[in-house]
Length: 181
Image (cartoon, helix red, strand yellow):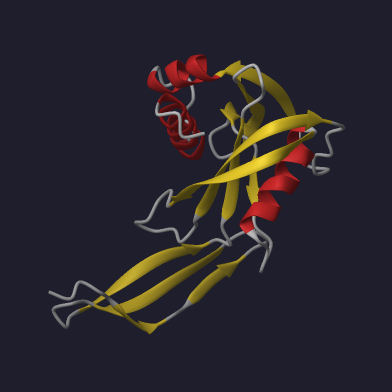
């Protein structure tokens, strides 16, 4: 059975600096039509940077939509046409001051496929060295170094609630357990 939907029309309701919002009409597999609310996003990256002491680099920052401080792995938005790995390197340096000798893909994450087209590219980074942080002018954050096993427990205890961070932490821990890193 073909489960695909065919776009019949796209109606852009809003275009902002980061996202746009569409109300599209689609043809369903049974021939009927429906509307789809779609948030278009350029995508992003997330970097699980593990130092020689088996500590991951995290950033704690205020997230306006939730009205709270969140603990996250360094991450950021892709610029149009930007290579995800290069974006990850840039974000790691800007947010933590760290650079890495080695990067490995941890795959992609679709954070909310029911309405958003964002794709987050996740990377593992090792062989860290440190310099100055260069956060964006509207970005205020604190860097924390958390042991990998403690980070896993924090994910399981729901102390880390960010989806990309949860996924990347658990992937790094499992790869480490299997000696794949």
